[in-house]
Amino acid sequence: MSGAELAPQCEFLNAVELVALTGKEQPAAQCRALKALGIPFLQRRSVPIVSRVLVQRKMLGEPVRAPRGIDWSTVK
Image (cartoon, rainbow, N blue to C red; front, side, top):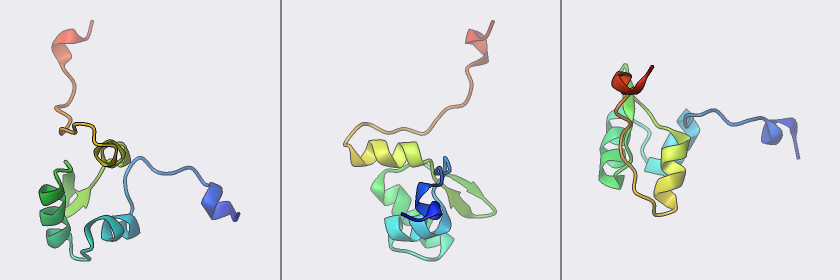
């Protein structure tokens, strides 16, 4: 195993992983594919940002929904 294979994974999918997941290279097409797959994502400059955890849950057949942010009413 090379050092690259042992490196910790980022919380978000990288560009190569997005292409592998969606089969699309253009960000707009990736966004359409992610919507069709039911995988929530954010966008930065039209580029999808996809949580690795949400993709893993989706692949396990677990329900996946977009995070709604912090519920400040529960913070003491």
